[in-house]
Length: 436
Image (tube, rainbow, N blue to C red; front, side, top):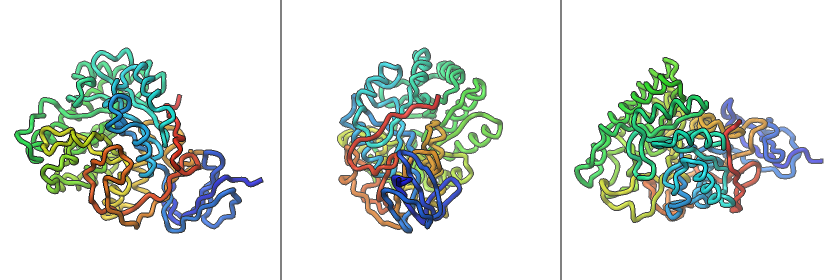
C-alpha cells in the first residue's frame, strides 16, 4: 500500500517557520507530512521542483466577483480561474456589486445558486451591513458568512448605501454580540469632494488621505466603545498607520490590510487617461507607498489582498472624474507584490504571511493559509526568478482591463494544487464557511 498520494519537493518550501528545503506529502486532500527534502516518501505521484519555490495557496479575502447581476463584469467561473492562475486557492467574495447584494439570507442563496459548479478554487462569502438590516446579520452569521462589510462613505452603487455613525454603532453592537468581524471601507464623506476635472491629480485631490485617517479615527472610537472586532479595508494612506498602531497598543481589536496596487504603483506614474488605475481610495505618492511598506514591516498592516474590482472596458472612460473606480488584479497579485518585496529586502516567507496566513486568520478559514500537517493541500509552484510582461488580453479576467498591462514583473506561478490536485480546468472549488 502506497502511503501518500502525492509528494512535492522543493529546496525553497515556505512553511510557517520560514523557507527551507522540504518534501510535502499529501494524503487525500490534506497535508500528511512535511519532511526533509531528500527523505524517502513512497507516493503514487511525485514532483521535484528543485529550486522553484513551493508556497501555500494564497487566500484573497477581498474579491468582488459581481455575480449574480453583474456577471458581465466578472463572475465565479472567470474570477476563480484567474485566482488559480495567480496562485490563489481561496477567495472570499464581497457582498456588493452583485445584484442583489448579500445583505440577507435570500441574497446569499441567490449567490450560491450562481456559484454552484462554477468555482475553480474554494470560495467563501462576506455578508453586508447596510441601513436597516441589523436584523439580518445574525441569520447570515448563522449560515456561515465570515463577517460583515460596511461603508462609511458612498459605495459607488446605490443598492449598497453607507452607514452613518449611529447606524454603524448599532451594527457594531450586533457584530460584537455575535463574536463576528466588521470589515470597513473607511473614508469620511465630509472630506471627500467631486474632482474638479478629468485628470488624475484632480481625482486624487478629491479623496485626500485625511478622509481615510478621519474615518479610521471614528471607527476606532466606535470599536473601542462597543467591543467589536473591526478590520480596515484597503488602506492607501500612510496617515492611518499611527492611528492604527496606537489603537492596537490600547487593546482595541482592529486590524488592517493594504493592496498590491498601493504597494507597487505611485500617483506620479499614473498616465493621464489610463483610468484602469482609478480606485477608491486612490493610489497615492511614491513616498506614501514607501511608508505603507514600513507599516507592513512593523505589522501595522497585516494582510495584502487584491480588492479585485473589475468592470467592463466601456466604464473605464478616459476621464478620472467619470470612470468606474476599481483595479482588476486577481491573477497578478503574487508577482506584483514579489517584484516590489524582493527589491526591498523581503523574502517569500514574508509574502506568504501577508497573502496567505494572515488573510486566512482574519476570516477564520479552517485549513487554509499554511503548509502544515493537517491543513488543506493547497500548494503553489512559484518561480521567483522568472520574468514576465503582463498582457491583459491573456489573463483569465473576463475583461482585459488592468493597470499592469505592459508592466514587467518578477516571478511566475507554474502550478496550483487545490486540496492535492492540480487546477486543470475542471471546477472543483467548494464553498467555505466560518468555523462553528
